[in-house]
Every structure is written in C-alpha cells, then in structure tokens.
Length: 247
Image 1 (cartoon, rainbow, N blue to C red):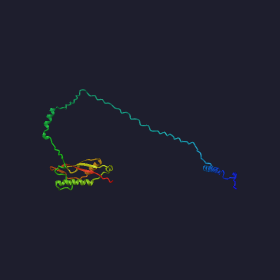
Image 2: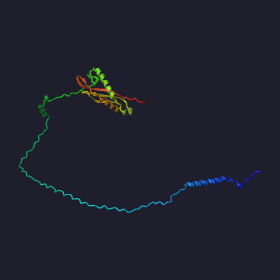
Image 3: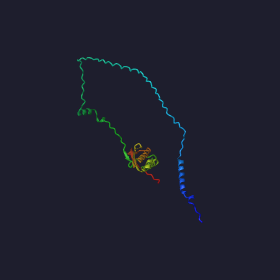
C-alpha cells in the first residue's frame, strides 16, 4: 500500500518563493545598514563677528612759514659817454695790394732762387721679394747651418714638417662637424728672418685658423740672400687635416 501525502502540509511546496522574499529582505536591510549615517548632536559654537566702528585720528596740518626769497638786485645803470671828435683829423686809409700773379711772374721769381742743385733726391731702398725656388741663398732654419744649398733646402723642408707635426692640433669643433681637407699656407720670411704675411686657403675657416697658428710659431731664421743682400722669401706649405672614424 502506497503512502499518501497531504498537499496542504507539504513543507517544500513554496520554498523558492520564501527564499527569494527572504533574500530581498536581507539585501534591503544590508543596504540600509550601509547607508545609515550618524551625526554629532552637540551644539557647535560658530561664533559671531563683532563689528565695531574704528575711529581714525586726524593728522594735524602743520603750517611751516618759509622765509621770503631775497629781493632781486637792482638793474645796473649804464652811463653812456659820448666823445666828440673833430672833423679836421685826417684818417689814413689802408691799401690792400693784390696777391694775384700770372705765369710769367712765377717763372721769373722761382727760376732765380731755386736751382737743380738745391733739390735733394733720397733713394728709398725697397726690399725685393724672391720665390723660395729661385733664391740664391735660401733662408736657414735653426739647426741647418753650415750645409750646401741642396742640403739646406732639404733640411729646411724637414724642419718645417717636424714643426707642423709637433704643433698640430685638430680643432674639436671641426671634428664634431666632420670638417677635413687640405689647407695651403703661404707666408713670407722677411729680410730680418721673421715669418710675416701668413695667408691660407682651405675648406673651412676653422682649419685655416689652426694652420695659420701653426705657421706663426715658426722660429726666427737667417734671412735669404739675393746678390749679397737680404731679401724677402715667400714659401708655401700644405697642411692636411684628416681624421679616421672609430666605427
């Protein structure tokens, strides 16, 4: 025999509805608990502003009596004195002679006083400039004394090259800009043995300035001789600026 259940006393018949209602009630109570706020009910003294009229003291006006300026000086009285001159006095007139002369007067006047023998002619000795390649006696670089002409020329060229290497400095700005090239420097060794009139031509002013600085440091030399007299000698030297990349 099968047991029978009474539908009126079944416990789990509406359990899902009750669970949903209870869940909503709990959610509502939780939300109210989170939104609940409390405040201190003690009275707070916000104070008050007491505006009282402030009186300003009046600054008394002090009158200073300045002394009156002194009176201006009286105008000067000019007394005119009139002297009476008699009309019978003779006054000599000044005669101005003409200073104009003609060509004939000038020739007669100066031809009588100035002669050819009275003119002093001074000769101005000019120092000639001779190229280094055709000079009779080339300038002697310090340390090249007592050699033949060909040996003196070789020694001169070698000493100049050694001087350039010893004083060579590559400009840092030129390295940063990647500037390189050949600079031709021309200078003169004067009749005293000093290096003068340095000129250069190159790809950039930075390199030209450095090349001229190197040449300006050359020492004093024995001047070149032409026909037994010291003369100016021009000389040219190339200076190559070239750097190698480390990459």
